[in-house]
Image 1 (cartoon, rainbow over the protein chains, first blue to last red):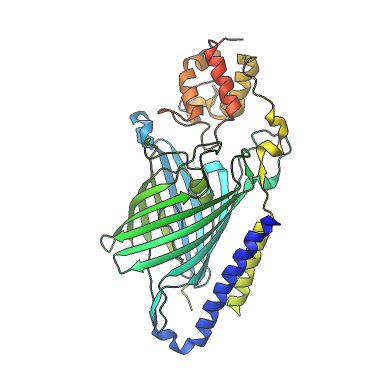
Image 2 (cartoon, rainbow over the protein chains, first blue to last red):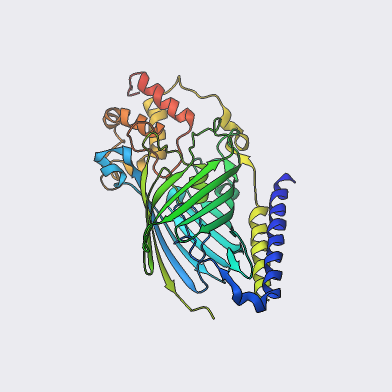
Length: 295
Length: 126
């Protein structure tokens, strides 16, 4: 029963917000032109590792190639980590003005993943003043690693994990955007009794726009569960880097202590520590194709 | 209308996804793993080779090492002995050694202590 409660509350909460947005839209149709929505809070649909408030416009297809290399402290022999690489590929699509979805595959635990991101509130001024933009991300991931012990009874459910995130962002002028991201990660199977199946964390991220093409981004997730007794020492992921925007491409080049590129991995399974030098170079390349123009 | 259909389908997808939530952990799900860790009867052929074969030989066998395993071979006794310090660092994720197994979780604590036990007993070829 306890397991059911949380998603139900979550749906009620989001449904309530939906309704608000809806009535606002229909009732104010005549005034809609006077509402000035904030755009380009972030350059890309990701801050660095995690999702940003940005969505794709309807009809846009985003092909993303992401890499995280080995750790800098693995030394010159491994070319400071560049000899080793983790990759994540994804295809993401804007379905409507408020909904996008994507599927991906990463070699971290050989995981397939899918997500939807939908807008609940949009920052605006003019006829309707809204101080923040709010979106919801839901995603599921399936690890396809071979079972460590094929002789025991293995369950398909053990491969799955889920993520729910509430993205709350505000653009403070052209220069600065900030986002707070309360996140919930559920893992169906964990290693020991000391490892929580449910992880709660708060992410904070931001962008400082340096030029029209370059911005400086940073992102941090704080894990609310106590990590002291977990069977594996986990650290909070911190990423710092730049966005370089060149027309249809966005390059994100950064340093991070996490290996995985999906929420389940970088929130709950970051075993690298900045203090110890387990820092990885990473990049995301995003290429947007316009399949059709919005009507 | 389109908007209503979409919001309903999003909520349904959400319910379907979360309806298959489980709260499992390997200790409770597989109680046979809770047996105490045997580090006294550790032998090269009985303990270490099966461990290496399960977790390492997909990249570090004599056949695969040149292409997948950075030329580090772990199949012959002499090779394991000469690489033992590195293996220990890699499976414990310590020092500047590349963490192993690559792209996967750490070995179980018991497996790591068994490897330790074999090293501290002088890496016998038994």
